[in-house]
Length: 227
Image (cartoon, rainbow, N blue to C red):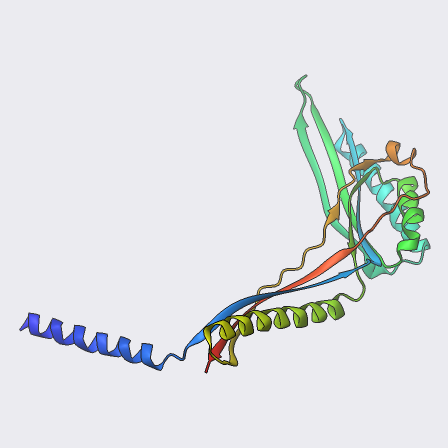
């Protein structure tokens, strides 16, 4: 009886699977990519203050004084408050080789600079105010959403072109899109400078910025029906 029941279940399952296969329309899946290359007009600048000493209170006060001066300088430069943000604050204790404790206080500030022509002046200003590290600069565009849209259109056109090529080679006709998956990821290259105040003082303020170009990329996967 068990053998008969198992055989019946297997037959019904196989029939159901065959029905699904028969009801699934023939389709083709392709991937497309679109790129838009632009000259950046904005930058995200990450600066920091770091102080080390044997007394935690003294180290923290030194950091607080530098940060206060930096924020006042940026405010005086008419930068919008929303474009200045504290990223990280830390106070750590560690033991030296001489079995004595030292304290390190650090604070990182992110500056969204919307006018690249002010880059040199702002950088030198924050260093003069007390910043002693520049962690990195990320170049961006103020028209990001517009360029993302253009990149998506190019990605879809690229996918459609591939699908047309394949269906023509197969002697079939391309149908409607059945499934669209956006695989895009936003990435901005960061220029890591790790510049200290002493090195910044030696900078030649001319020709210090070369933002180049950034590429906005969109990736899409599309499944089309075949007719």
